[in-house]
Image (cartoon, rainbow over all chains, first blue to last red; front, side, top):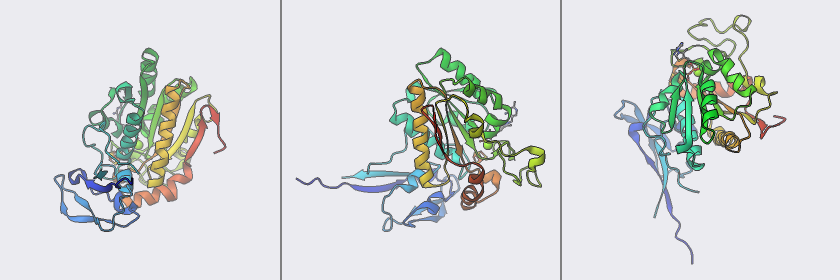
Length: 74
Length: 247
Ligand SMILES: Cc1ncc(C[n+]2csc(CCOP(=O)(O)OP(=O)(O)O)c2C)c(N)n1
Ligand code: SF4
Ligand SMILES: [Mg+2]
């Protein structure tokens, strides 16, 4: 029996973002860019292009502000 | 590959500036303490500097020592509560300027504590004064023409100071790139393990950006770390389980 592979997705808490751009600099798929919108703290937060994103998790690792999580969905 | 969830130990958003390395180090330390099931056993000792912003947001027990004295306080806590995991978390100004003696003597005595020193080359919280770790030529508010080593000394290298001591673990990591953050987590885990196994003093120095006081963008700060900071402060493990490495 083959197990159904779970899908990984990146979730974002945009109001935590301080717009430092470490994720944009580090993303190997160049899937992250800065938004023209500002969040509740007044920072331009980061946007992920989910078509380019490979859910590698680099953004989770480099982010100083706990914006990203990688979660599995059924 | 597994999920990556923000550690629950980070009970509130941190209060550091945009791009500050302290936030990454906080998260990596929280991951390690959770993976090793030490959160409820952990007592942290901070003193002053941006490190002490974490006592409100990082969900372990904390004691705030006087400026520079975090290691002395941690030694006292560990001696009376040997069953707890006891660590210091300090900036370079705090631990290596006014607190140099306390930092060194905890290692000289091979106290069974774990020290984390965040080297951002500057006094961050107070607005960017020169630290013992500031690089030659570095402009700070107290060295506006650039640090002159003939007046202020060469950057203080705590790893070199401690290399000959009979301690359990000694490493220098960095949060300057994804790969280095992955390595840093291994170093932190190894240092923590040495205390839990009763092997003695462990120190991890961590190179960290302070874009605010370096007056740099994030990219500029990361480039500066790779091009300049690491020349003075090479990374790696220097003592493992009491054995000196060739690094
Ligand atoms: C007795 C005393 N003297 C001076 C200060 C001012 N002071 C606050 S933080 C700090 C140094 C912070 O630098 P560092 O330890 O490198 O931490 P960072 O903010 O860079 O992470 C100083 C000197 C103080 N709090 N107490
Ligand atoms: S002043 Fe520097 S060390 Fe302090 S929170 Fe801001 S970036 Fe971090
Ligand atoms: Mg500092």
